[in-house]
Length: 343
Image 1 (cartoon, one colour):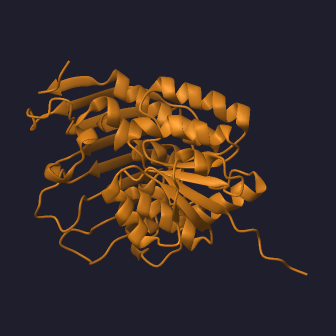
Image 2 (cartoon, one colour):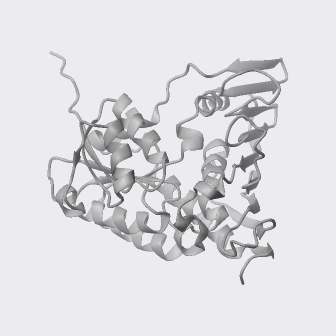
């Protein structure tokens, strides 16, 4: 007789970035049950409660951490607060899913690695530019099936619209958000490791700048990185210069070069072309093909729930999660500083 798998009960702590809605929806669509949330900002509480009336507002963080029926906690707290929260979650016997970045310093990462090794709990980071885009799922399938041969380079572009008048106070404090490479480029490091299969890498070059916003001396509005492994390389560029004339927040792209072809993903818009999102272009020895990926399923949520039940690593290995963050933090620390930045 077949039985349904147990339902994972989860709670939310920290609503400071709107990515929390993507995290929540991934789990709900995968069959998890949202039971509680906690935050201190009245306006954020009301917005979240409106969308998820089934969740109880907890009186404190401790109420959630000490509830033995909750298996998973998710968070999009202020970036510098995510790792300390994640450690507390794991020390209370629960698994943790953070918005990116999961860490804002190498010291946080080292301490979290220690706590994760001691507790054997899951510390996952929802890299939305891969886990929440369907073109990324298709690219994984194509590469695994040998469509472009051996991957030898990724070029990841992460442009964003600044909308500075709508940003919270912590967005302008480097110690809180970690710097532009730590923050935005964490996506591109995740994708570099995932699509190349690299398990180690070194930072060849990194630089950050404040080219256009001297009134915000701790803001970094541009960053780029060159990364190298023994069989592949990568280039990353991130910025806050998406113009208002674009119909979305950023023209995020990833080009994956293989020995027998290449893939380009235009994840959020195909400028002056096809409508919608999740566009993929495949070029190899046999064809040039456009693939509409907008109707594919997103597996990350279901895989993470399975990992919680079975204590496996199908959504993302713990080693991958930590290495992607280590590379971003190392590049941020090494980056040359240009423009109007503080020292």
